[in-house]
Length: 147
Image (cartoon, rainbow, N blue to C red; front, top):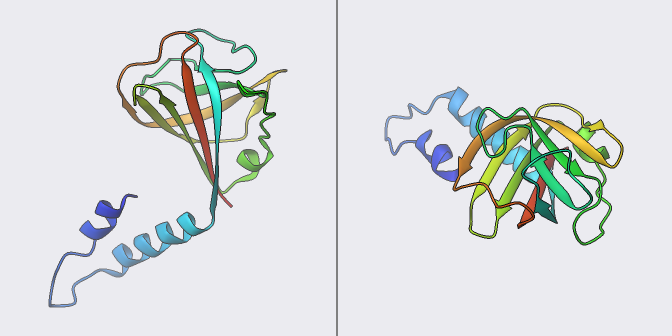
């Protein structure tokens, strides 16, 4: 929930008609934001899978009907990415951002599947802006988890 969405639940009123459900939604969102952790990794975009070392792709690249992100266990800079926190989180989200500002955001809906050298993350897309990066283009992958 964005700040604007939270504020929309609290209209400027003088009658005290803010609902308990709206207030609960805001407090819950703020709690989740405070109990979250994120990491950002450098990757290269792959237009087809499975991804090689340092690459990331999707089963339906940059589409809101995609169901899986496929991500190398090793980032482009050689960093080994751990998926334990993502797999055990209360909730998690992935952002893939291209150099042009194009961005794909999805909720991770379950634990990753280890496919030897890369992981497959089940997703529910939230938004897609801009066009998919070209093959081998630099992208950043942000993994955010709620503990």
